[in-house]
Image (cartoon, rainbow, N blue to C red; front, side, top):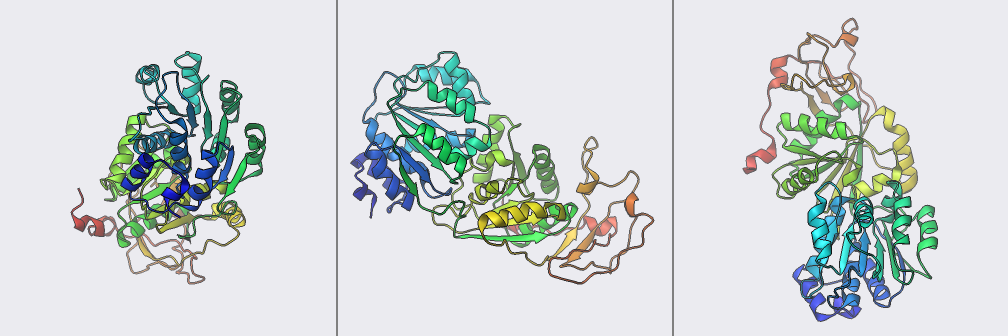
Length: 462
């Protein structure tokens, strides 16, 4: 089957061809005809399967040509990044039509968005918060909406948008087409569908919570204070040029991006406390390979679309197992391959157990490679690192060492120990199961400071 077999108009087919797509994905084969027929749709598909085109293309065809009365299609998304990317898809696929689109989200000035809305649009892409704000200001009306799309519906519920969705739904005409798209197919999603959809056609191209088949999933078991050293080793030795790294907190994302940058790996954080301009700039730098590591909180799990992103790292496991599915769905998109690496500290074992239960399969543990435990170079004076992240007590010298896959390197000289270990004897080298970790022996500050250029630096990165 080709896109022309789906009943799409020539202008839309030309725009699809310009994107380089020839054959529709399973979700597109199932959803596009149903949307064109005017059916309500409940679609379950993992991220990276072409879900956006499966509703954008038929909506563009159904709307036909520009009408002056106001938005006739409303697409609601959970994050700013996703809203921007959906609207970008609308503009591309609709380039051969005279339909107009507007995107609105928080974090930026309202004035340009209000001006764009008042100039008229056919498709409105929005996040719930900003949509409600501007609706209360009567900057636009939703009286003419014919198609309502709830994108990433499960993420909407996770982020607590259920009440916002209900308030927005009350602003819409009762007679309309409703489409719900979700990466996971939970009971909560089905309950929401019962209240929103009328006699929907269910489209589920993958079993619930199934991760992308082409994602290679592995884990490393180690103490949390050694995670950043292993991550730097994996990036350098694996010659990784583009890796999306997930942390649980905004502060943790800032700290890790700073640590990686000081270790010679260009990195940038992206999270909800960053301004929209800063988030856009970080994402653009990542896409253009100006930075190697983009360190993100959950806000980016559904809002980042990088073509052929090769690596995703769970620096910290999420405490909600479904978020693991969302995170690793950033790689192996649209038929490409990818690798998801999870760094698991002992306190995260319950989170990993929940993830394995959800997946129905194990995330295999890999033997730890030999990697350097390096002291953090010239941290800003005002920054106080938590002891668990490798901070040194006042007055002690830098420490370093090297892991050797479950045993320590005892060939290096000892320097001063952290206060909590200053009276303890040096631990014996341990040899056991793959993935067992013994504390690395510290080395001198001079040896800890030596570093050869990372492999990717030899390629003339800018």
